[in-house]
Length: 94
Image (tube, rainbow, N blue to C red; front, side):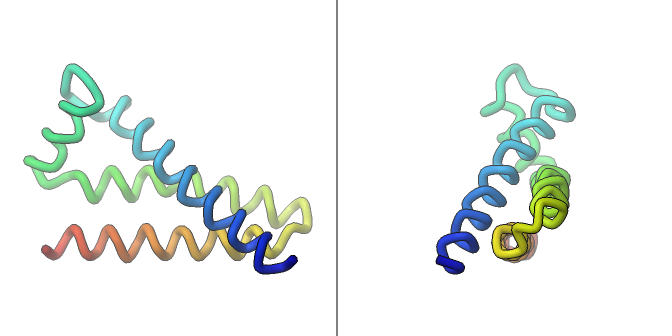
């Protein structure tokens, strides 16, 4: 049962990162649509920065789970944040 809670936390963390990336593209993007903003961000080399800003939503999810005594889900959100960080590093240096 504990592993199920960690997996739920990972899924919530990844979804929060995608939502955060979408919001950062909406706020900071310069294109006509999300796809244009994404292409412009990749061309200008700021995509990884937007992904990092998008991962800030994981902070809210993490503290929400800590405050409601759902440590296993908080652990999953932390794992998701590490996954996003590793993906960001890989994208940045390739």
